[in-house]
Image (cartoon, rainbow, N blue to C red):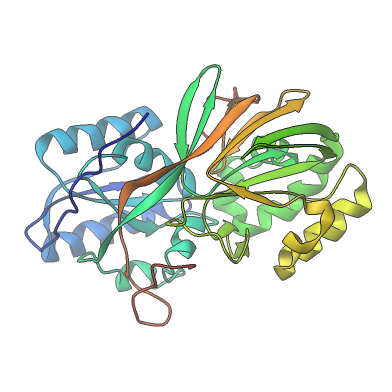
Length: 330
């Protein structure tokens, strides 16, 4: 489906603004009072909310758009931001990221400062840029994603990483549960079609990346970014454990795409099926099952860029058991 690009919004201190914070994110509840006080002094804050569910978050943003709100300061982790992006896509609403989660992958893609002083150092006055989003289409529906879609080991990992575990342990929750996820995950067959090519291989983990960062500070590929119009797809080795360990180690070093066992490919659209069918991890949230079509929605989301950058300058445009439908963030 083709979408007409919405004219670029212009932000000023008078621009109608909502603050929407996920109280279940790692630091959401603690940061909320500070954010309300600060934004009330510097911006035209016409509403501030602590939505208790994914449905309430969508409703709050939709109501804001109908009310003429342009700037949406959204606080939480990647799941929260992904839900907000699905509502703001192809509208005049601008996503302003407030990193309050555990991994904060999208915030890292923007070059935002993380840690104790992140909230105090955020700026909300621009520039605004159009970002691509990933789209996944399955037999049960369609959804957009910010950072990436994962198949394989991560399905079990997402089920194990409850919001409570992430709030309590932070990044420490990952290594604690990785061993359990590995034991519960078997190799699977991938059938991938793109640009007239057809690949078929066995692996334990498949990655469909949209942004440069895959999880926290781990790069998907050095070439990937949110304005390149491409999906970057690779596997973490083949079916054997040694291949998984080797390619995963190369991933941490940023050299995995040169390994034959990574099966790296790039295209704006991918048709992927697996044997057996697998749940899809979209930005840390399990959604539907394969087979699926992945594609890029170009310039689908207005994003506030250049806030609290680590180097103090604006980031460059270039390369820069729950059911599967349930969110792990509420």
